[in-house]
Image (tube, rainbow, N blue to C red; front, side, top):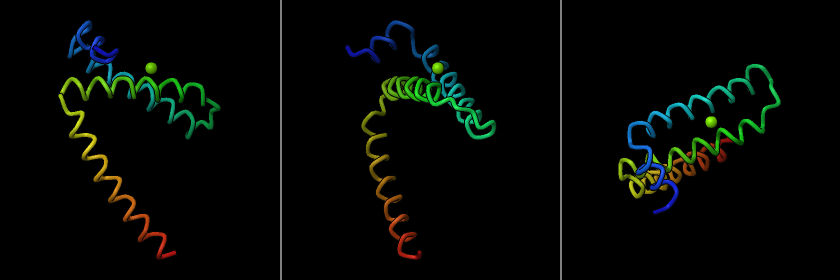
Length: 91
Ligand SMILES: [Mg+2]
């Protein structure tokens, strides 16, 4: 078992999914501080981004959607690339 699987097994699905929300809100707060209050909080942004990524790994395992997320992400990135190509052409 990797660390994400161990955390899920040890602490349980519901607490870990609530932790996803908590970490996302902490990251949200730091982004808002940075933008609205012009705060120099890059260290906090690093920390909270890592926390969210760690929790998102657990969310994917929890719902058994690792592969589906990967597929959707690849398709989405392709679309974004196409939009960017169009946008760059119009400039
Ligand atoms: Mg955090």
